Image 1 (cartoon, helix red, strand yellow):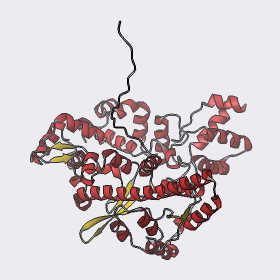
Image 2: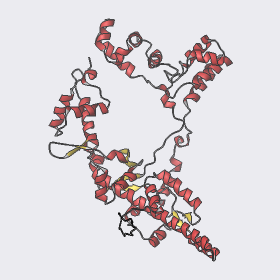
Image 3: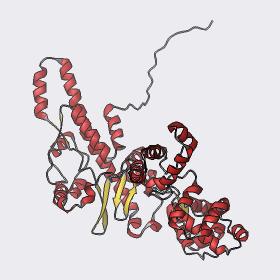
Image 4: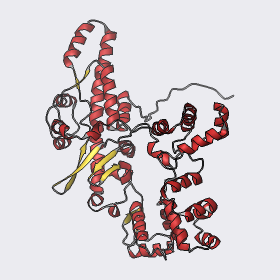
Length: 462
């Protein structure tokens, strides 16, 4: 019979445990500058040992250059100094130069914009009531999403009066508002902007599917008009706005605050982390000492105070580590993509997060968190940081070429083509090969479609 017995074995295993401070540091990496400021203010309210310090002078460049990973005492001492106040003073000096646009409130909504016009045009209170109901049932694109029969039934008014009120709204700004279909929306805009073009109205009303499919020859044959005139109508209708309400669609303005600014100094691009508007933290050691005295012999209170102190110190370390990681990753990206900053998108290089991780000696997941939802202000404009990461394809000189650069080249080549004889995808393949880029026709087709560029047949001009 087999015996069952218990044994005790010692076995060594490696396990990763995330401390509270480490979890906090990871979460800090993913915050934008504005989110970080809100997070800091909340922590100040929660932790009695944290306080916001006043700001004093230190330049942005010195701040970026003078730091290595600090020990605790150096960190606390440094946070008693301040930086970026010269930028703050410059901002104060420029306050008087601001124009009225800085003090404007947000734009009116589509409903408010139309309601204002309705009050001016409605002939009686019933029309006003119907008009408000109709405007309230427009979607963000400006289309009516309720039937006139339903409106008449809900308001207990004649159908003809509802129809008349809708026609009134359809004369309002923006042109095309109040339409029930795309075809009606475009027709309303033609009524207001191209009244002297009867051919456009005929084609829109009777050949809309053919026009959308660019079957110009069929339309020209049916109407006995030159194909060039049909294409001119197509160009006119393409210039209209299929979503007239979208310019009023958002209730609030969305602003993007860049997490870093790139400046060029003596031929070198330098990254400045834009956290100077965030609250600066320090430990109030006077309060710490007073609380320790008040704790007396209470071990529970002492433990609580020590936890709060360590939490405060951990937050300060985490914020500084976040800033250092952002600086290292962003500076690495800028160094790699300096040709892009100098010459434009054609010189954007292939780059992966793994490459950046190896260059700055941190984990790839850290790079991913650093660049998440962050923006960089550069001499070429504002970019999402993820824009600088691109796949690459092999070129004839064995150097990889960025996919965004190839798309840019395809768009530029098509811009210069003969409109009466547009280039086929195979033609694009051959032209790119002459430029040292060897990609398949299928890849060219995929890139062209991703750019929203139609096929050569649909690009042809008569």
